[in-house]
Length: 118
Image (cartoon, rainbow, N blue to C red; front, side, top):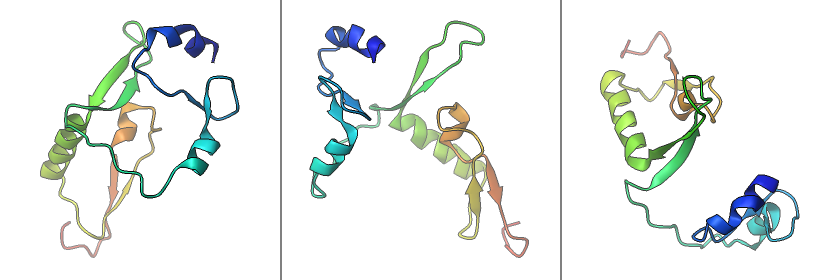
């Protein structure tokens, strides 16, 4: 939290800071969940909005965050389906962690032998 606290003044558009524990000037995660309502409206999204930030390890340069938009996800999913059609009996799995770029998409398909799509 020291790092975040040191740059809070540089983030004027960031309205809320959420933490898993109680801390001054932070919203406790569990309290936020308890105070939320099931009928809260969903925020409108644009395809150019940032969906996630994939952090690199800096293997070839300094570590950095790669901004992944909703359109990036849609395009990747479309390419995935064009190259590898999915069937209702398929089971997708992913062994990559969610903080790795490979964790965003399934990296294997288990297909029963009786499936006519094989």
